[in-house]
Image (cartoon, helix red, strand yellow):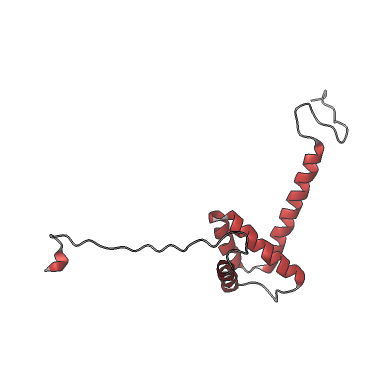
Length: 125
């Protein structure tokens, strides 16, 4: 591949994204890496596992929790590592507060199982 030349900085191929997009992407990946490092420092293993399970189900909620934890760590509100029980408590506080005021509180649903009694049920004997 001797015929290939580097493009001058700030230019791109026709129809391709400009190099500034690469800078923004690098900045986002750096911020994401910093966030992961903070989470690894702040959370114990049980809390990290629970947060990763939450992220599978609800990535938005996981990001909200991470943001709260990062702010708490930066402001010095966290003493030691956050345990799984403390993370659960934070989740409950978020639900009681309506999800941080960003969205209306979702109604909690309850599933009620009612078993029908048939004429040939053995329990009636």
